[in-house]
Length: 209
Image 1 (cartoon, rainbow, N blue to C red):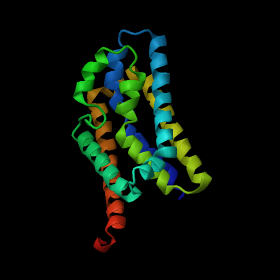
Image 2: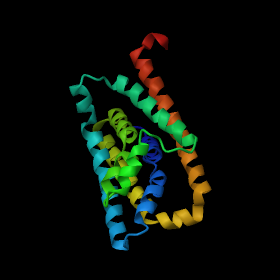
Image 3: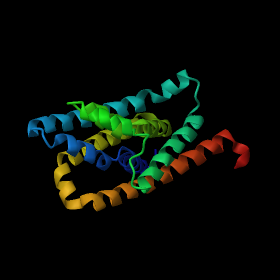
């Protein structure tokens, strides 16, 4: 694993998890709750994000093998998924890959939103799970696996911090600031998706390269 790989994995995960995109739902559902309830929601959401991504990283490739899916084929499919998410974020929209509009109505009827839909599918959705599975395939040895695990834990901590200061961020950044941050992360995601697609096609169809 290269020295810059930890940073690349961390930046990519932050972009695809996009905790800023979860702020509107979290803030809308926490206005009438006590601080203790908000704290429990934040703790559960961050823990769920960590567990979902860690399980995907550790067992995702074995699951692909069970279904007879090659890593290169998954790399192209996951790249397309991440590219679509990035394009959606560049347009200032929440990707349906992460959160379908019909789920917004379900949220209103739920008291605990920490795991569903806040952790999954809003933050640790299909795009994030695809990314960690592909990252897990690139790392080698216990050292690389440890760095990937630390990157996932770091992202969960960042999720926890963002939700903790959600109200302050809303007041200071405003809608425009959040949209700018979302578009920057969307650009990063689009580039990651294109790279995954190119790498997958290169191995699936070596004659084209």
